[in-house]
Length: 287
Image (cartoon, rainbow, N blue to C red):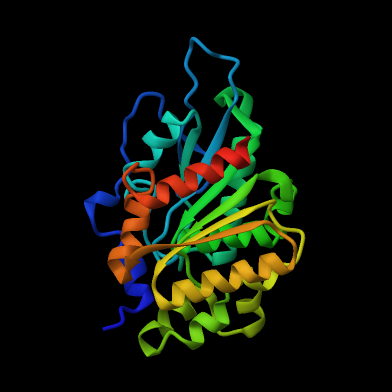
């Protein structure tokens, strides 16, 4: 039986294994906006003994069907530890949720969080010239949108080079209208809540439709064995390539809900094949 995408998106948040490891040394909780949801956790990886080191930064955006999830239950337990061990800083952001906010506002939250961290880079020991955005599920859609539609970065006072690259993990709705047309009745209400029924708005919220330049400098797109997720990832990669934007596309093992959960839960676990793919890409991007 084919599992509806929204069930995948939402059930992936129910397991305790999705929680980020909290309370690690150096963790800071910061507000990047006035709304209670506009907060982030950051592990700068800056030791008192090395105050002048500016580390690359990986920023993670959680999933949850645009209406659920948080940095506390949907980041995965390995990422913050693993990326610090590689010498990177790591941040995980919260953002306002549908229906209290729009998807447009969510994308702006992501861009604003990037601007906030860049502005405080020196204090946090972060290199503002070496930042990557990673997102899972609905968060993958949001980072892909911010990385292709430059209006969000522009409103935050940033350019396309505000980040070195974008890593969407098993995302959805890179082409909203296509996703909605293939979703069936079960999905209709959820997608309409997030994206509405206006074709112009649906197109405006589709990263694939914005993939002509300017884009973020580079993309690493990963997906598991789900028909819609694979098709959406492949179409986004093809659109980016047509525009001349460097993109790597990788299919990982794992089917349906289990695979969708696994790519988030286990990313950063050295035993998970996707970890080595991301690590090698980050090493190249960060130089």
